[in-house]
Picture (spheres, protein in one colour):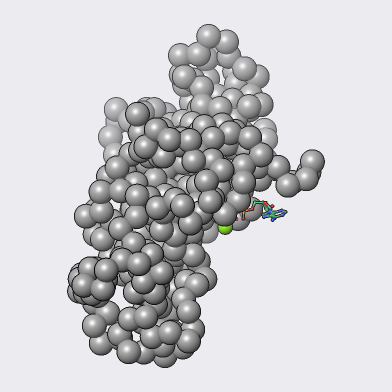
Length: 358
Ligand code: ADP
Ligand code: MG
């Protein structure tokens, strides 16, 4: 039995607005689960139902074996960090950190102790007497996290806590969060639309789209074995090449080139081929198979690599585009090049359902 469990959770606002559909998942102590998906896919609504700020239309929230679906938020020992930080503007940092504990009538000595621990952990010492208006975005963020941590909650819930920070600071605070929550035993549920945050922080990622969980797996598995087209296209930057190709015999036709199909019972008339730009490589030996040829029409310098867009040679159909990450030590502009699509790196998807084909 897991610490926190969502069983077939649904939320219906109106017949047209059903942001959460049949969401089931489990998060254990020591686990960091991220709800990842585009804006409007139901992440915050799911989190708010865990916190008790929103009542589910159907389904259950279970904590430590107890059904808490309709328990008041104040009676659940959960700490939430909001995107807006939600600090009290008229209170100092110290008061922001301690006020929740005072309300709960925690003994004074213990409040002092807990606040001191968090202040130390988050490096807030110099800021204790300032008010939120006198803090930078990153500092406010740390105070908001600190306020959740002093609670010593049974579950931590974070809703896009880094989205108000600029890119550099976000990277730093992300690393801080990872270290901080690695020490907490309690389950963490983290909401973001940022795939990098999801991949770097989480032990498990639930990808949501349109209210449904698309895939629930560790980050490596999400990246290397996407369950469907949505996940394949959403995770990974630069994005995976996804090409709709006609099939002929046991091959898919990529322009003038044949790509061998996997072992599937019936060959469809069309199929989607997926391959990540970093897996498309230059021809290096005579033994290379699944070679395609084409002409470079765009080079984008990403610093470490060039993202090179190629029109694949095709005598019949309009040219298809494939993108590859290639070394920066050569000029690729307008070149004719040969590339290999290694079979082990190709993902095949059903055209209709978008599901991965085995
Ligand atoms: P996310 O956090 O993934 O961006 P939300 O869970 O906030 O998405 O919202 C999901 C959908 O539910 C959105 O279409 C949003 O407009 C709708 N929604 C959220 N709260 C309400 C509400 N109180 N009443 C009606 N619709 C809502
Ligand atoms: Mg949201």
